[in-house]
Every structure is written in C-alpha cells, then in structure tokens.
Length: 335
Image (cartoon, rainbow, N blue to C red):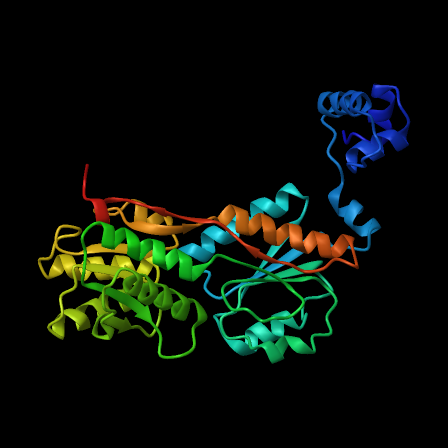
C-alpha cells in the first residue's frame, strides 16, 4: 500500500503542511520537528512522488547530458558520476551522443529536446562561440571541457596546462630527459593544444629543449591511434625515454607497441596518461595518469543546472575542478 503525506502526518502527530515542508527541505523547520517527521517517514517507508513534485513546478525532472564519445571510458565514467549526482537531487539523466560533430552539438545546444528536459550538460568538441551567441532556448546550459566560449553559461573544466606540467615534472624528477608527447592534433582541438602547451612549458622551465620531433600527432584518441603514433615515432629512429600521452587510451596503445618492440615500461620508457580510467589500473603494467575529479565535475554540473532553474537572476560561473597525478607502475615500476 502506498504511504501518503496524510499517513506520515497522522503517525507523527503533525500537520500535512509540516510534513510537506520537511519532505521539500524547506529551511523554516526546527531540527526537533524535522527529526520527528523523518522518524515517521523512515518507519512507514514513505517515498515522495518525484514526478508529481516536478510537474507541480512545471518541470520534467530530466537533465540531458550530451557527450562526444559514449564508448570512451572517461566519458562513460563521467556519465555515471552525473547520473549519481542527479539522482541525489531527484533528477533523471537523458544521455545524448554527439560524436563530436558540430551539427549534432548545435542541434543539442539549441534545445531540440527542450520540451522534455529541464537543463542540458554539454561536453562539446567542435561547437563554435557563434553557435551559442544567439541561443534562444531558455533551459539552463552547462558546458564541460577546456574550450572557453566567453559566453554567459556555466563552464566546468580542469586546468589542463597545469595538469600536463605536473605529469611532465613527474617524469623529469625520475631522471627522464627525452620526453615525447603523443596525441597532438592537426586541427584546433583545445584539450590537445593545452596539454601540449603544458608539455612545452614544463620542459622549458626545467631547462630542457622541447624537441618537436618527439611530438606525435594522431587522428583520433583511441588505442589504435596511440599504437600507430608510437610505432611511427620508433620507426623514425627516435626513441624517447618517456611518453606523456594525451589520454589513457593512447598511452595504453603506445605501451602495447613498446612491449612488441622489446622495450620495457618503465625501465626503458616511462609512460603517463591522462583521465585515470579504470582500464589503466588493471593492465599488466598499471598506468600512471592525471586523474580529474570526475565526481566533483559531475556535482558542479548538476548543481549549476539546478541553480539556473531555481534563480532566474543566477549568474553563471566558471568552475575549475581539481585533479591529481596518480603514480603507478608505468613510471615507478613494481614495488
């Protein structure tokens, strides 16, 4: 049998309005009264009807999350964090896959699902500022990633230059001097440019030359791209003693080729990745990686959407999430 607000009110000996205030987390309820009502809620097993609550507020209870690569472990893990963060606030997440295509990112950002969502969290790759300048859709929009659009939308990212410098500094502190960067792009990929910039800046700060012959470009960001770039680098006659990869998938592909060529990781070549995906923690050689705080990114994104819904005068913010370098066997060896 479904437990109603009236049932809880009778059990607690209070008014239905008081129960409603507790359920909706209104601030003007004394701690003692809140505890009294909560005991009745727990004992009766009352569960609020979230759909009805959202409808009363003219909302759907759904947040859309649009990502470029659902098959990429980083985005899969980030999506799981967003789902958890939204669930804590009584919201459901609708996933969209853009494939990193500008036309899909424009379509999503312009609100083609606006009738069924309360807000949008978008991680764009190709979207241009002009695509958002005349956005007429009113649902809150939160941007993830490194591209700064300088527009009035919440933007959540980590400091990619600083993160790359931490990774490179780790390799230099281990005595590595011929550091390659794998994952540069021929286009204007903002994350790749920032991480390459961090690689150059830290080498320069350490008095080491940034040998552009050790910069390997890739067409994509997967295992095969890393393997192909590593093979091309070795075939050119260059043999770095360390590799900083754009992401973990490229790093794992590169490590495979190093093993095939008889080079040991990390004894011959140390490797650092980026994203700290689960796959990198369970290989034959575990991967040292820059780990963005994915749960914090997810919480910040969901909170930004809800803040935009609740306060029409809300001023969007730029939020810089934390990161850390997780050191493992690909640079330290087995202990």
